[in-house]
Length: 442
Ligand code: UGA
Image 1 (spheres, helix red, strand yellow):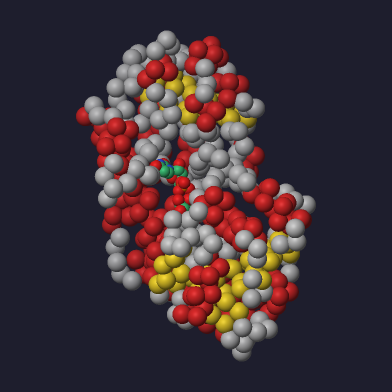
Image 2: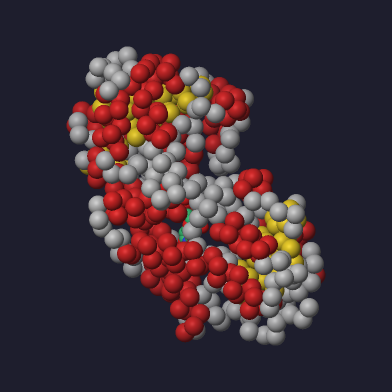
């Protein structure tokens, strides 16, 4: 199939690259000329395992190309994938201006029947608006089909090739079948729904996963008070097939470009039809408090943070990505600075992106984990990069001024500390926490 993908961000680029791997002729379109130039040079603008290899291989074989010319790409295509961003407006609502603009340009460029597949996360009813917008610019026939995307950053290529399911929302069965055919090689588990239900499946899925995380974080907070271990609790809960073990890792809360944005948007979608989504509002509040909890705990360890040196390991919102959008680290590092601490920060790949969002003379940007720990009064582990778990705690201890470790992702186990004097705090595992000892003298 000849496919044009509009928007070469996370979803668009990975989708385009994977469809080209399946033998489709794909052109990825983006307004960002620098991004197009990098892609044409075989370079991926995002860090995503496996993506660069596929870009090079598929572009080299002639299946994949990149352009800034949306009109020409649309004219050549049988199927157009809409994958532009839908960021949050200050109200929490999704900003649909990129969607609207792309629909106008697609409508203007139409030269025959085409299927427009919406992969951007859009509020219920948006695909109908996309259809109306395109229709107002063309008399050519077309169908709009909603195919929400469920890939995760850091494992986007694997997720795209091995989806749990494909959801196709369509009002024309023939268009639904054509889109199902395109996905059949990826999975046979294809669910065809009406368009509004497909749009809702995406928000409901992200909101449910966010709810699971906030739920286990609250259970962790209670575990700390009653002397239970949240990792054991999660294990026991997860063995119930009705609950499932995924997304029950307690920590410092969810971040990223999806859960925070989509939970806010769904609260707003509900609000627009006079429904108060109380549960999801609490999920968002719990997630915010979980981040500030780190600072509270640190102050329990150290007393005032003013003048303290705090090492931070991990800035990305999760491992295997350089993405820091809505990362807990942004709130935590800026709060540490506001409270007068000096921060020594290290992330294997996300430092540059972090500095573009937040920079301060009192943050020392370090080249490796041990350098960040040098002279620190305390260390906060905020992202569970595998290299942190492999740290020799004896060597780490020798670098630090005080042996205080806040493990925001429950990376370390009891054994690790057997021969050290670390005062250790993790999330929801009171028997491991050794923080009630004396606070550090200045
Ligand atoms: C999420 C969804 O998982 C994807 O299905 C969806 O397609 C995507 O949003 C999207 O809407 O585009 P993503 O944001 O890439 O994917 O990352 P996740 O792996 O879901 O993690 C999100 C956040 O939750 C991270 O900050 C992670 O650290 C946190 N998390 C995850 C936990 O705190 N505990 C867990 O048990 C799992």
